[in-house]
Image 1 (cartoon, rainbow, N blue to C red):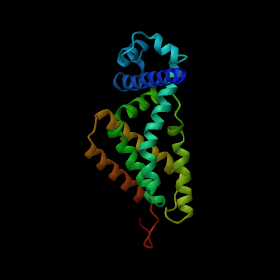
Image 2 (cartoon, rainbow, N blue to C red):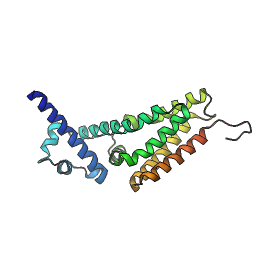
Image 3 (cartoon, one colour):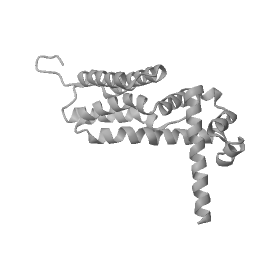
Image 4 (cartoon, helix red, strand yellow):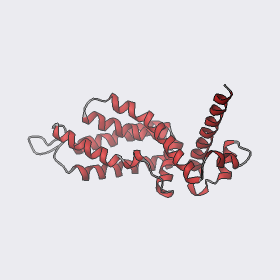
Length: 202
């Protein structure tokens, strides 16, 4: 029982440090996220507690990215899974990603900063291009998307989505406006990928 209690305590302390690091990075940026600042935010007596749980800053940042991916995935994936069909899933992904800014602002701001300024790798972020491209290809094969280059569309859509998310996160956009932005962006993507009509227009 004592060993289990110790493990739980250490696990909880590690999670506490990761949470504090995410919040410090979100508020002050990666460049200012020193161990001393993180320790103070976490309520730790010294930076030694961070060094005890993590091999170094890179190890801590990797843990932050993993935690952020788990949190954001838990918010977005159920909405995507609940959508039926390629078009509905595209809409669900876009709307959930934009609304994520309001639900988990610290995680979004921290991940943007880590990927952009710390060179951190995120499997979720890096895998989106292939995810979009495959989604467009299979949707085209099913006849629900029009004729376009899936790679080009994937590049354009991920860049556009990133721009909206980053701008909204920096501005602290409220939930109602985020919902509107998500719908507008999803509408735009759905129209852009729709099959051509008999008259030649979309």
